[in-house]
Image (cartoon, rainbow, N blue to C red):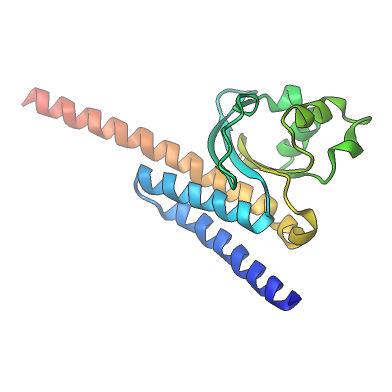
Length: 195
């Protein structure tokens, strides 16, 4: 039975990586949205997590939740909409800037040494978390995996920084493509007006 679980888990992991590559290949905004949602769902299923969220930079110190997958379809929590990583999670922020992910198996174990992080997790009802920085020359976002089954996904840990770096690069390229597309549309409109 254990071999079946491991084979299924490897197949699920391959699905996550395939979906990640597909996000980089997407041409339209709708394809990107669909594939990011599918990517988060696959991570949630693979890690047996309660929720997986993608946060993207609003400004230097705030990140807004842009995508979320919740396996139980619970209403979204306003506490978790904007994430002030540097203020709420100072230990996370310094790790993120070094390209390191954060893995907290049990929030109770950080209660004394990292009280602000403990409090932020407790307010959100999160007992364990994996946070993956989206880092490509700068911190552009993060993926937050709430209450995953840590024992089942040990093989996942070594590739966290790779996933974060790749998705950061893709998201930055998407933003540049969107800006370029908007400029091209403006140029086309101006040409039409001139004719």
